[in-house]
Every structure is written in C-alpha cells, then in structure tokens.
Figure (cartoon, rainbow, N blue to C red):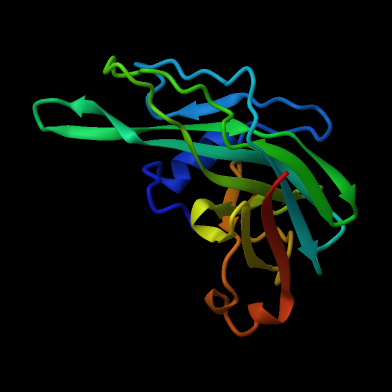
Length: 218
C-alpha cells in the first residue's frame, strides 16, 4: 500500500526502478526518479543525520528468491508547484532514491535509510526551504534464475508507524506455481505486490511466504 499522500502511480514508480538493480555491498543512493525533474533539480543531502536501520525478513520463501533492489520515496507536503496554471493544477515534489543493502543471513536483509537524504531547498523562491519527508522504504525480489519473469514488490510506509522511530509492515506472496513459465515467454517482467493473506485464493493460501519490513531509528 502506498502512503496516503503519494501521487506517483505504482506502475510508473516500478517502471523507473525496474532497471536499477542494487548490488548488495555497493552503496549507490542514486536519485532514480523525480516527478518534477525537468523543472527542479533535486539534490542529495551531503550530510544526512536521520539514520534508520531497515530489516527485511523472508519466511517460508524459496532459497532462490533474492532481493534485487531497495529504494526510498520522499515527498514535500508543504510546497506545491504549478503544473497547469490555466487549469489551476498543482502537484507535490516527489523523488525516489536507490538504497544500499546487504544480505546478513539466508533470509534477512539489512541496510540504512536516511529520512533526511534529500536537501531541503527554496524551490519556489518564497524565502523559506521546502522540507522533504520520508514516505516509504521498498524492497523487490526475483527468483534466480527468473524463468517466470516476475518481480515481487513490498514496502513499509510512513502510515505503518508502530511507535516513535519504528515502522513495520508484513505481507505475503504465494508460491503456487512459483517461477513457472505460463504461456509464451515474456519480454518484460511483471510485478506482483506483497499483499494481505485474504487477497489470495483458497489454493494460493496453502503456499504462502511471508515478507516482513521494519524501519527503526538508530
């Protein structure tokens, strides 16, 4: 589930991320996408301080299901820019960055995400900076080799706050017909989202794996 304020359509976000594989142990923190990139230059904060550790845990998942990317999404809720002055249309600033991670055990991944990873600037020339806020941390998985051309995508968002400095989300994927080629070979990967158990059919519920996301202040 995307955060309540997100304006990026999930398909657009995943398209931008699809070609950006995060090699574990090699930090990148690249800005992958901004909604407003043609008009405003979004910069990374050279000295971020709001560090949060994230942990992603798989349970009952196949050994060949591996993390391929992690990313953080940010938004500026208090600054909106004109997209069509004649129509009075306005939009929030948004950006997505790649986040480094490492595999610490057979089923656990860890990394650090900075809530202040982007630089606050006066984009609108109004005499005060616009403040970026963290919106979500996502991690995607694929079988290796990926015969089925599928990608599993899950995330924890700002609305999943458990207590001060702690966010958690848990969901499921079905392993029913896992990594099987159905029909003709595909030339593009398709995405299946980590979902609540009740969204799966009766037979699919007999073959579930759990993916848990946690973001905790250091």
